[in-house]
Image (spheres, rainbow, N blue to C red):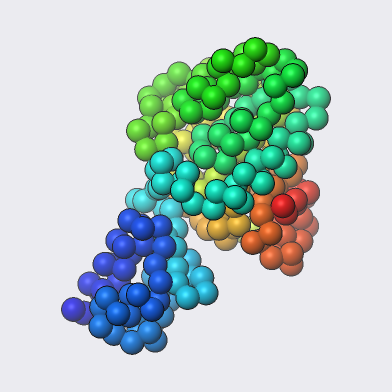
Length: 253
């Protein structure tokens, strides 16, 4: 097996399992750990994976995006802490947008139950979570439902959003970087997120540390466009400070 074929298989395994381990890859392919590290370095240079201590995980891109079901299995304790802290930033907002994705779904669950809230969302999971609450009014954006994320997109959703003024938007992204801002693989998803950024008075990004430095195909916002970033302590303090210099308050929980 040549290096190109081995790297293709490593990438397939990373995308299927969510991460790969250097020692296991070395045993599986019958090559040295140093060879595997070179393979991972090459894949990282192409923006396909991000290396960690002892392994790597796949980067979402125009051609690859994890499903909602997969996201519910990764970094769950961190996402739960992030969601709780993000919900605490609600303030006096009465109309709220909650994005698609597992972390936003957890934010929806953490929103207060004892006060009236109007929640706009593209996520079927979020709408289902909130629809039975006594004090919640849920507006589900219309459009084409993406099977992997169970969320609506296309012009029906963006047209509906254009008629709103939203107090606070909880925004997710597949990647956030200081150079390229907030990005997502799918242009249709990017259009919905861009419209949310336009109609919301306040915007909060919530996401785990693995999102930072990752870049997907479509940019929908700059880092400076959000008032706060809520993430976990896996993001180094020095890096959090660099993001805060661009404008937002960075909260590590």
